[in-house]
Length: 262
Image 1 (tube, rainbow, N blue to C red):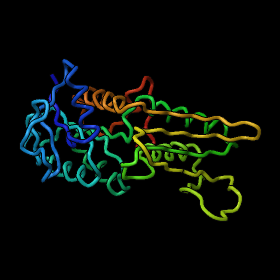
Image 2 (image 1 turned 180 degrees about the vertical axis):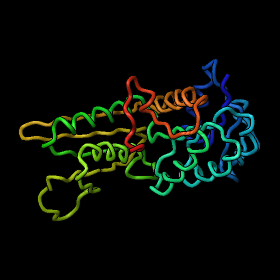
Image 3 (image 1 turned 60 degrees about the horizontal axis):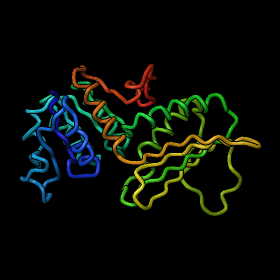
Image 4 (image 1 turned 30 degrees about the horizontal axis):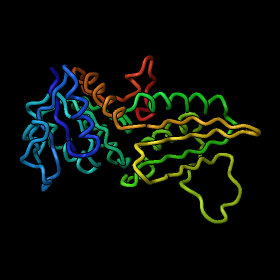
């Protein structure tokens, strides 16, 4: 039985993971962590005690799962270094400096980092990489859509799509939205557009536009269950690994190294 702690257990993804784990016989949640002052601190949900300090419960766990925000994630990582427990991070919105800190921590204990835990999205990256290489003279545009409460834009998945495109087309110039007299589209330009509204779990569209035709690669998450399932897969994958930075690409059959590692 793999014992995990869930940071952000009362959030959307935390609740989804709780529901999924209840149906499993190889993983159990030994505790949850929420921000200090949260109304559920000191209480329990689904017989899981809620703490405001990861250090209070991490000793009982085999792995930590984190779906919070960048600053909370970095704080939890810095405070848990002495325990050196495998760590699964689904938080998005990290700065480059914060990514560098995560990479530094991964030299001490195994960290699984994925801006999107969906197997489908991570296969989408491979399709984008292939199509960017084959259709080199086609224009590319990216559109991502999320629920009205999402705080970061563009999404972590859209940023990873940018890295994938850049790995094939290193001279690409990325812009974010267009307004006013922007002149005609530059050949090396890729525009990322962020749409927010409703309760959309997540949609990412990558358009390859040529003369007389275009191809659209699209992933739509119909619920957050696909992200929770990916997080559980990540736990099973990383729990016996040594120090290092791991990604969802390594879970896919014959997966390629993530552009984050390059």
